[in-house]
Length: 184
Image (cartoon, rainbow, N blue to C red; front, side, top):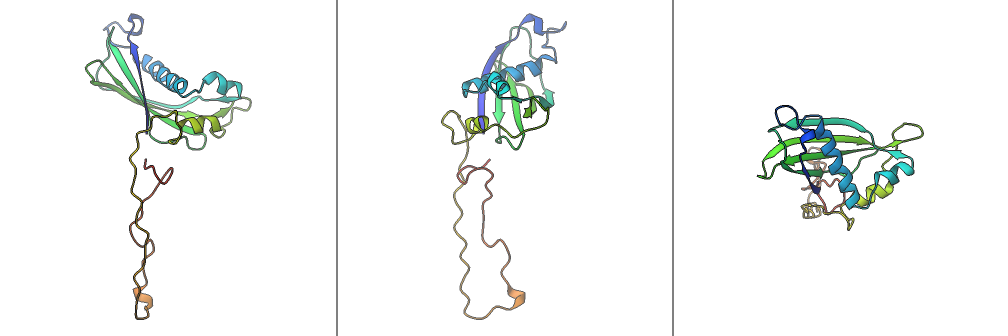
């Protein structure tokens, strides 16, 4: 899992009449967190667009738990729990106030598209390698799984009948979704 934090101070123009952050501004906060995370990894949206790749939002979800108010210093946490898959990548967000209270949660599903055709395209290699767990630029927090012991069937001294056939799958096995050393 990759994690990146940025801080944003709530400006007066971002609040409604009650002094709460207007709900439409949270999408902009998510975008700032995403853009700054890219920048920390050496990726610029501008470079992706120059290469003919766009990243429109395919889905946006926001859950408001508590209101953020004028002049609050917010910490916007971006979480990437799985690497990009095909032409999509899911970013999750958490917004905290200075007291570390969770105010808002959300996610954006971004889609890589070819800007000349408008059709989905595979995740660019530069993007994939920058977000990969083995990249020196990323700060992945992953727990490693011990490798399971190889399955060694017991030797039988008598012939087996069809009814006593060994079950498929054998001994304990671990399922890996990225590299054998990292569990997601």
